[in-house]
View 1 (cartoon, rainbow, N blue to C red):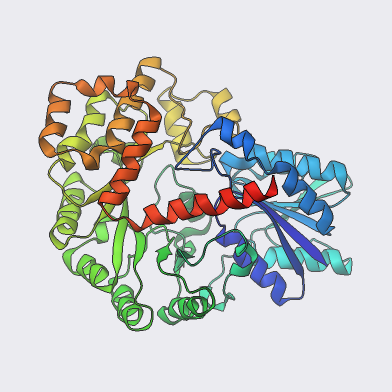
View 2: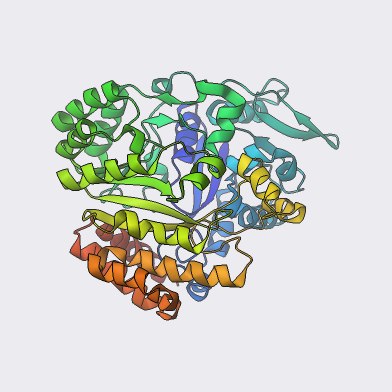
Length: 495
């Protein structure tokens, strides 16, 4: 029996785990993949013209048809939902094949997703074993009634099975099927891995908070040190990668686990790595151990330096003093770090956008200030708060649930034109912030010359960001360049 996954965007670890389980049980698995170059899935370079020029929609549909699958699977998240629905409709118009939707959007608003004619099955939450059981039931002509996490259609009715508990021991899972993406991903540049699932926090805008709501504290789970090291050893032998990215929501939450892991990592792997961190866990001992083990960068999600907004709107409890202390430690041990900042937050003002300059002006090892927009995911508590504050109306919430929204990188929900201009000014300022001397930053804020940054052409901002990558010897600079060259070459050959 054959199943093919359709995916647009970056490498998808979830699909790799699904594929691994299915292959281990004798199913034939394929992938129709579009890296999403220059699309809104591309967080570096977005261009509508280049998006159309390099579109791979027709190639994806052709590959699915030629694979002649028994089932077609889609992973839907809110910002790609409209695109994958369109693909599903076109595929169904060419071949009579059942489709199954999974992913965060299918989990958050299953009623919306399964209401479409092009969606036959839907899997909520973790999908490894539900998808295996569904395919087994289709193959053996069995009932779907016992397949937990599954929603399906029968005789014009939508049947909704119960949720199963999350996978208790992540070590029990087979290693992700990296071979599925090997023709499209340069693993030798960077290896993507998860050491845990879930998050101990409940930020109002983050999908992890929804899983925490339905599962409680049991949703945050961590793999054993042996399991993670074993994966890296096996895959390093197979792909000879040069760097590692830990894609956990927060990589270091357990000091004892981390100390044991870093000791083994230094001894067995000893490659440069980066991760996502949280200032509440970023003390001197932990950060120094990370640096000594090969960490070349940590991504800290601050979002805003307005403590009231961060606490009351985003449900993030850390203080500015904790943030400053963590960044000062990174500066002291010369460990580079990124700072995530978010635009479009309810109640954010011009003064709030100045705060990062005041707090970070003297820090020297900031690698990038990464600019995102508040992306509203359905059913999260940020939706209720935004509605309460008059930022969202019922029609906006309906658009969010149907995927007609912006995305983290290129579109936003800011309606006021003056605020949009202000956002553009500060966004461009932040993107070139690491190149500026401290005195210049202070001058720009004091004289409010940031008000003219929107006139800087985008290509100049991109060039300056590239210069930042070169000056700071950022490994990711090489990874990005190699990725674009790799996919552009493949696409040009296809023309």
